Image 1 (tube, rainbow, N blue to C red):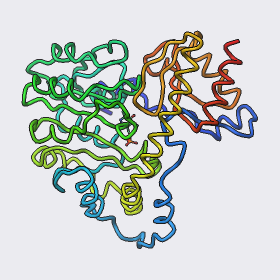
Image 2: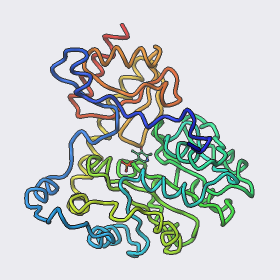
Image 3: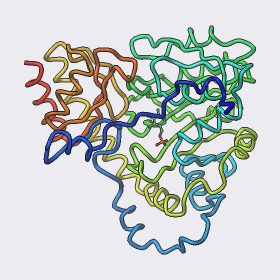
Image 4: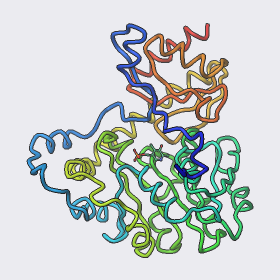
Length: 360
Ligand SMILES: *Cc1c(COP(=O)(O)O)cnc(C)c1O
């Protein structure tokens, strides 16, 4: 068959190891998975309530316009209903953006390392990648500006950045967009913004008025604890959303997922509580690393990228044998580091004890 040449050698996304897989392999009774930045506290009790009462006929297609969720998101974020694009996870929105803008005659600018799906989808569309190395875990916005030329179609900013957790300040984002040509889409992926406690952080929604080429990506998979339901969304000016909407597969967010997301969104007290617990959890890791002189990046997300003084894959294996799944930095472009999702206080303590044991 005549596959696109760029598909040669491409691999599917490698998810973190599954709990069941590891339990069997090592004969362990319990496993703590701190690898995929899922919420260790689950989701709001309002979601469980909704699920108990869910009674829609499964033979009927979902609401393709997702009116209820759209209205709730518009109200919560202060945009109009037609400024919202829903995806089966924000992953699907990344696919739509790549499909809409990227092709063999274009290039796309992003940081390195950053979230892998920008690169992955750009390759599928045959676009040239312009990857600009992070500086101390942060986006090199000046370097990214320099990489933009007349063939650049999209620029990606992940803030807080996965895998370093470093926040790009809103002032820097603003100044950056101000210098990007108006016909280049700037995608600001805020998958972890609910966790940010940095006082300099401001919601970028007001920037949407000023910059028609800005698109903000968010998700219910991380702080809202709904990764299994696959709901993500983009916010932008109506014209941009209208351009992307034809690329959205029909009925891409299921009925039950729409309802679960509405319930989750209605419980902001839960999100605040998770933000606070996460902040304390991050501190456990920072204190541990500080005491031992291990380098880490100052994270604004619900994960931390930490040096361990060992080969990343080796450390990953040692932790797994002892019942903890983390992410090896090798797979994330961060040699010598591991990325740990912040768990409950007890999970963090247990993992840090085991880390000490392995490092001794
Ligand atoms: C997890 C993640 C996503 C994708 O989340 P979905 O589950 O597809 O909504 C997008 N961007 C970043 C930076 C992520 O870490």
